[in-house]
Image (cartoon, rainbow, N blue to C red; front, side, top):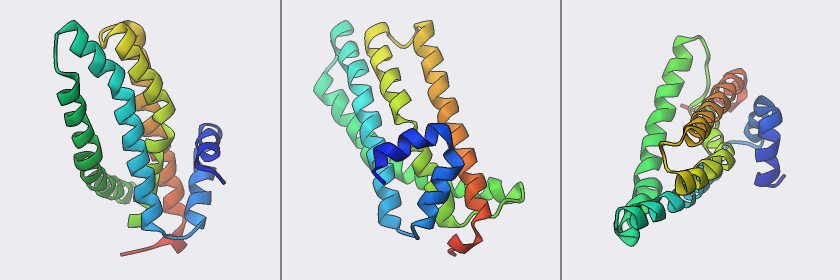
Length: 166
């Protein structure tokens, strides 16, 4: 099924989608692709805010966009791997037993699935600024959606004992 259809399905049933993704077999290339596409979409969502900052504060849009691109495409994936490790550890403390791959899929897919809200948030930051109440509310919704998708994904990954890896 196309990724865009799975993203829409995630908003209706995140656990079912993660179950389907895990049943496709362990493919690290697919998981990193989801993470990288999510980071690319979040980078695109940052562009209106960077443009606003360049116009309002006479900043350098090109420099700021290059820094954002480097941060989201080079550094963020490393942090996401560490975050997946931490999430797996927390799941173990709560008696869940997700595999390493399952915990990565749960996190990376949650990040990608929450990008539609990230795009809306980026648009609002560019139009209204980061301090507008509506912008902050959508930012909070983005964070909440991402965390809920991640938690539901970890719950589902904990059920799948056949997806184990060291």
